Amino acid sequence: MSRAVYRVWVPGWLGLLLLALLNGTLRATVLGPRLGEETARRVATIVLLAALTGYVRGLQRRHPIPDAGHAWIIGLSWVVMTVGFEFGFGRLVAGLTWSELRADYDVSAGRIWVLVPLWTAAAPEVMRRLTSSRT
Image (tube, rainbow, N blue to C red; front, side, top):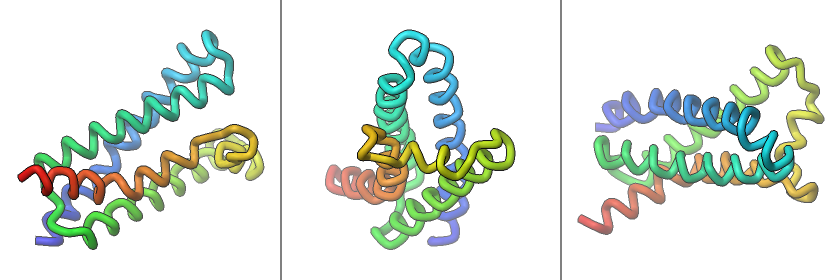
């Protein structure tokens, strides 16, 4: 059973990646020009959190995770892939510095992006519990 779960959920990260890329495009092309960069970043973070919630909920309904252990492994795997992609792409493709990449995680500067990896880690377990409590 566990291998079957991972065969769906680990590649399911690509859906998260697509949502994040679409969200970044929305922020850069629509929200940023209308709201200013800092407000656009906050709004885009909230939009992405909502999109991730819907995506994970849909996956959980179609391919239920059997227990908390599997859910946490999936969530943490997704965080590793997300942060790896973000920093790897940022450094190698976008040419950003380490301090530029870390800036999105600076809560003291009003950045709330750190909520995305935190929710990415927790969402599979939260959605597993919510859907299992309804059945």
